[in-house]
Amino acid sequence: MEQKKEEVQQPSVPIFGYEMLRDILIPDILGKHTPDILYWGGKQLSRKFPLHSTEELSSFFNEAGWGILTLLEQKKNEMTFELNGPVIERRLSLKTDVNFKLETGFIAEQIQLQRKCVAEAADELHKRSHSVKVVVRWDDKDLIE
Image (cartoon, rainbow, N blue to C red; front, side):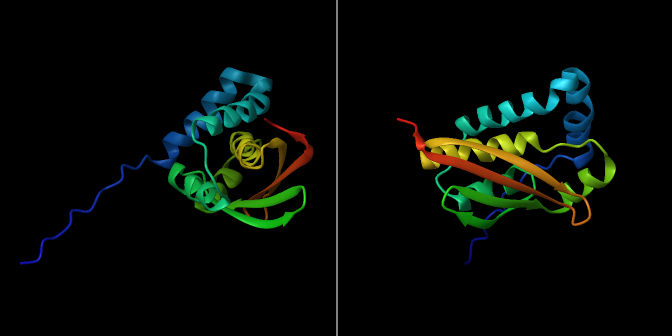
């Protein structure tokens, strides 16, 4: 007799609920400081969820519902990621002043932890292609012990 494994049903949150908190309530509370605080918050979250590779980073983004994260290019002191997918497309199409600083800060800190040197990131919104590019740069001279 073959036993059937029970499927683990992942709870899901409607995207509208996430958008209300992320794109309406938080900016109302934080005002003009929203981008800076979200970037810092992304770095803080990153420290609580240390990941060991870009593959783990991409998986984390998927599990968190932050979109599909792909490493596009890697140079000596720079990495370029693309963030896209239905969540990103929806956020870019619904709101004109949407930002992705939480995700950008999270990526910057992950690369900093993995490379053990100071890293910072900047995001570029590409509304036509419904994507966000995140460029992370670091200096090997700024090693973290």
